[in-house]
Image (tube, rainbow, N blue to C red):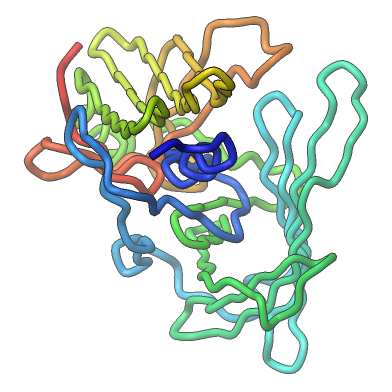
Length: 296
C-alpha cells in the first residue's frame, strides 16, 4: 500500500505527542494508531483531581475580580476578568503575547467562562468567545490555593494572582518543595515511539533530565516523512539546556528551568508541574506520565 502525502500528514498529526505547557487549552488530542515503542509507552492520564490538591474553601466572591499570570520576561500574559451574576461566576479568559523587540501586544485566545460553586470549588465551562457558544464548551474546575486562583481544564493548569502580584515565590522553608527536589533529582524521564509503512515514517521523542548537579536538559521532537519520489518531510525538534530548581508556582512546588540563551527567540524560563511516583519508576509531568529511564 502506498501512503499519499496527505495521508502521511494526517497520520503524523494523529501520532504527534504533546507535552503541555501551562496555558489556556480548549482541547487536547493525543490518540493515534498503534505504534512501535522504543521505550515504555506514554500514558495519558485522566484529568487531575482537586481532591489530591490542597485548596482553600472559597465563596463565589472569592473568585470575582481581576486576575493575571505574567511570564518572567513579560512576553506572555494570561488574564481572567470575573464577576458574580445571579449566583454564577461569569467572565472572560484571555491569552496575550507581547513582541520581544516591538513591544506590541496582541490577544491570541479569548474564552468566555461560566462557573457554579460546588463545595468550595468552581465547576466551570469555557468556550471560544469569538466563534463558539456554550454548547461547544469544555469543562474544568477552578479553586483558590491561598491567595491564588487555579484554573484547570483537562491536563492544562494556569495559576493566577491579583494584578501586580507574582505567581512565583521562593520555595525556601517549604517541606513539600524539599521533598519534590529530593524525589526527582538525578532522574531522566523519557519516552519515544515510531510507526512506519511503505516508506512513510512518523515518530516522537520526549526527554527531560533533572541532574543532581542542578543542570537540566529538555528535548522534544515530532517528525514525519512520506517517503517515495515525492517525499514530504515535516515536524519539529526542540532542545534546551540550563539549570533547574524548585520554586512555589501559584502556591505549589514546581520545577523552574532557566535555559541557556539570549532570550530573543524563546523564553529563558519554563515551569514543569511534576508529581513523581512513590516508587520512583515514573512521574506525571504537566499531566502526562513519563517513565524514569536513567540517571544523571
